[in-house]
Structure formats: C-alpha cells, structure tokens
Length: 367
Image (cartoon, rainbow, N blue to C red; front, side, top):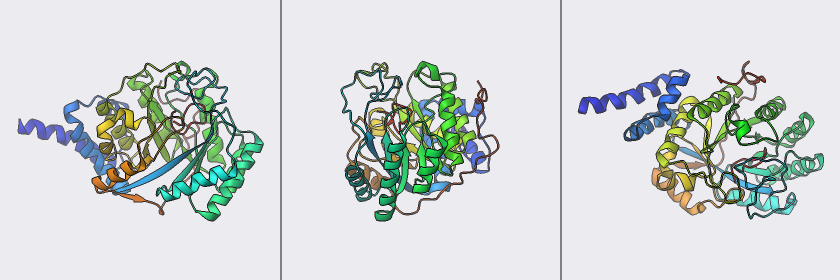
C-alpha cells in the first residue's frame, strides 16, 4: 500500500520535474491532469506547487476590477449578464467619469492591489471612449503608479497604440473557450475575432491578458485546446473564470463544477504555463468554496473584492487567507513580460491547437 501511494506521488512529481526542466505538456499529459483521481488531488497540488514556487515564490498579486461601463452590449455571449440577450437585473450605465475611475484606482491602492483593471462593456470602444480612458490612465500613473490593465472589447490598431502611449501596461481580452466550442456560447462574433484583437494588442507593444471560462458545458478537450492556444499567443497573464451562472442568462441553470475539478484545472494551467501569471477570477467563491486557499498553490494572482455584476468575498477575508497560507501580497515588483511573440503566436484562421467580467468581448472576468 505504501509503495502504491509513493508511486502515485512520484507520478505527479516526475511530471513537475519535467516541466521545471523545460518540458512542454503534451495533450495526453494535459488530459491526465484533468482526469486525476480525486484521491490524488493533494499529490497533484504538491507537485504543481513546486513549479509555482520556482517562478513566483510565495507571492500573490492582487487585481481590483472596475466596471466602468455596464450592460448596453450588442453581443450575445450566453454566459454574460450584460449581453443583449440577458434578462438579468443589473445596473446599466455609460462609461464612468474621471472622478469615479480615480476613486476606484485609489481603492485599488488601498487594498494592496498591484493592478487596476478598467473594464467597459460593448463590442468595442468609440474613439472618444479610448481618449477618455487614456486621459484617466495618465493621471493614475502620475498619482498612484499602479499597473494598468484595460478590457474594452475589440480594438483597432490606432486605438491600441493610443492606449499603449498613455501608459496602459496590459489589455485583457479572453478567448474564453476553444475555437470549436465557441459558436455554442456566442454567435455575434467569432473566436478568430478575439485572436485578432490579441494580435493587435501585441503589435502595439502591450502585454496580453487572456483566459478562459470553465463550466459552460465544454468538453475537457476544449479546455486543453484553449490552453494550448494561449501558449502559442505568449500571454503574460491568464485569468481562470469558473462559471457563475447568473439568473436571466442562457446558462443560468449550469452548475457542473466541483472544487476538486477546479483545482485540477488550475494545476493544469500552472503546469502548461509555468512562468505565466495564473489568476483565480470570477466564480471562485461559488465553485472553490472552502477550498479557495488551495487554489493558490497553483495560481499566483487573485481578483480582490467584487467582479463586474457579481459580488466577491470581502477583501478582509482575502487578506486573512493569504496570511493563513504564509504567503505575501506583492505591491511594487511587477515584472513586465516580453511582448514579442514567438513565431507561432499569430493563430491563423484554421490554426487552432488541434481540433469575467465577462460578458462581452470586453470581459475581464465573467459577470
């Protein structure tokens, strides 16, 4: 019995050792992580933590999300409370003024958030909205020095350049799911549309933040596909959303996840992207529940406080969780990742890997 248990532990630690030596996970290895027996989850987490610790130590990076423009979106993303087909009871308003956005930035600073994420619903921003965001970003940089991520939807090259010139460090634009599954969750734009915006962002010199939503009815192969595609895009940060099914959306009755599977997904993200920031995003409170802290043995980043249209747990509980883990919140040592992508980064129309805010193309984590 002892020998068998040692063999199980050795299996996951051997995989972690290969990753630490530079090995890129195969599809079969990705599948094995997602199919890890529940009784082996602690062994998988222990092995994954070795990779997390090698690249990020015991540090945790906080993000604060500001819903700068809510609802009013023409896209039909099925998971989103802000979409045109949603009947969810949410606030709807045009883009927030400078005072409101600066207040949010000051709150981010007070909560030890290294990054302030400005999110606006809609298919894409108007030039006037881009100019407004650029003006606010310059003031935030001058006054507070925060790392800035924006999530504004589909961007034109000239808009991306203006954002970069204003000091935006990173743009969030989630792939959300695989190319093959995408049309089942959205029909008003395509997976390739999202890839194209990520390429526009990279060409403007900003970091890419792009992630996925787990629990929308996808297959394990879809999760593996999008993880592989993100590898090719050379992203700097991957937010991992676990579906928070909102009443009034087409996915309102979807409740397929359990905490153990969520932990397996986080382990897979870390092993597949060993040196990339992995952020536990929307739905963590609902789906990880009492096991939230364990997710940080794989991930190294969190959204603190609320999301776009759903509530998160209190910042005080997040601070307590970090303290109980013996981890530390970082506030001033963001490492700017290279923005030049490898040759394979620009995903072609047919070049998929093998086959919240969130609601619109703008979402930073799902609503």
